[in-house]
Image (cartoon, rainbow, N blue to C red):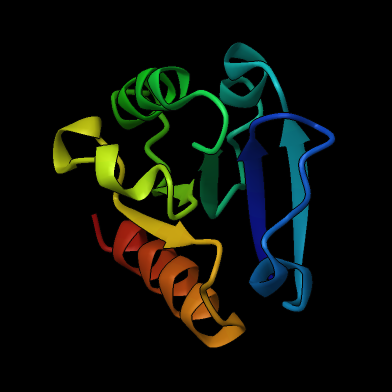
Length: 116
């Protein structure tokens, strides 16, 4: 079972794909708090729905953190057009993703990270 951290509004609903998968998830609305709890985390999910600029800053800071954890950006169709690789995230997950797509993304990113 994967251990996920989600950075974003605490009251935001999870994408359906994540609700259906077996994992433990810790939610944070503060970047510093999230970064202080990275030990043992397989993947960090950053919510990009409401504040893309804030999500970009979070991805950049997480990608430079001493405890390197794969970063997946959670995007909706309205924010997909503004993201780019220079944000520092490893990949992104759309709201419309299926459970299989979500599982493949966060398990392959965690496996890739263990090889670094």
